[in-house]
Image (cartoon, rainbow, N blue to C red; front, side, top):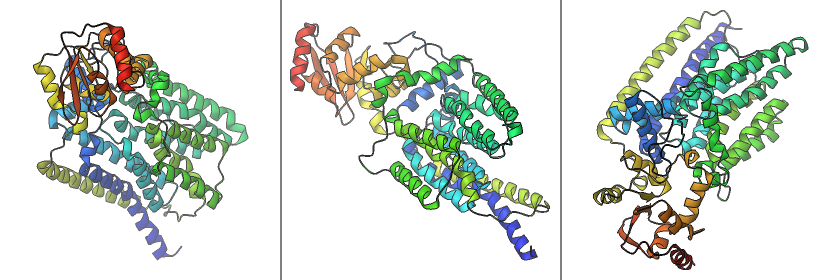
Length: 504
């Protein structure tokens, strides 16, 4: 090896050390610039409200106290730590706090992702994969707990794949990652589920004489991860709480993030799938059975629920990293270690400069930009009127529940679908979306509703306009309010018949 070539490799080694930091900084600045787009889901309201309750009381909730339809019902928060972080940041910096916290999580995710890929493939390709992963995840980058857990997910799966690539068992020192994940978000069950197929990848390529021993070490690690996932204030109940959402059946098809992928119009996810298939055919990519299973499982999850697309975007490249790296021969850095410390110094100095630049940019940006929640989720004027009228039991739209909770108003329903159950929420949607309008008067009477707060362009207000005993008193571009009138106690059967006719 010539001296000039060795120096070139050393310089590339130093540069590669800075690539993850630069990618993370770029992601941070981009999402900070579009920070208002992170505030589009009303679930952020009740997440912050619960986090503040935890800070105020020094404990975690075990029952519901925000609705009047499920008051006292058992309910646990599988994202309690994220909620506390969001609540604290919101108390300090208003909505800028959750936005900055979310952008930091995305930046950390991108940096970890590129760092893990860089061990197997060239830096430009790692950066390209990071850009594609962020593009695919744009629809679900919101100020909510799943984003705070995203860097933990990437680190966990990346470390497991690295151990499998080396034909070793994972280190016990990684188990705290699972405990952290379980306290941040219920998606930790994915990390537990992936231990099995990743362990098979390690065992399949190990020497025959040590396969059983290696398999048993992976089994013990899996048991340790299961125990670590129960290291939360709720203990083993965390597992039950994290899987309750999957028992909602038909309801999952009505909640946007749980809907299946829709290919009626071309999307970035569709393009990624087609590109993955085309690349596999073009390059003749050969994968082991466990890696094929992992890719198929992640693809199936993304096709079934759009909220799983970010897992597909970030985890599939980690599964493919080693096979892709073996297709291209990379020059290896000098093994003498003479460049190790200079590279570390360069990385440390670069990290300090990036942190300083990020802090300065954040301070300047916050100085002339005030982050605000999207108005379509915040019916401010309508709720002000309801408070003036002292409405006690409000039949609210699903997407307005979080905002009502933030105003300390008991709700009929909100984003905690697992609390209310499939039947309850399905009846609500059928009644307000016009699929079964005869349900609406029954629900209003059953829960003694004295006012309704529904979305302006939904069928529900039109049905209420035809119901005897109800009067529209307020309308704007966001919400419509109806209240009971003196003759609201008319017979339920005539009301139901009227609603059927009105919707035909």
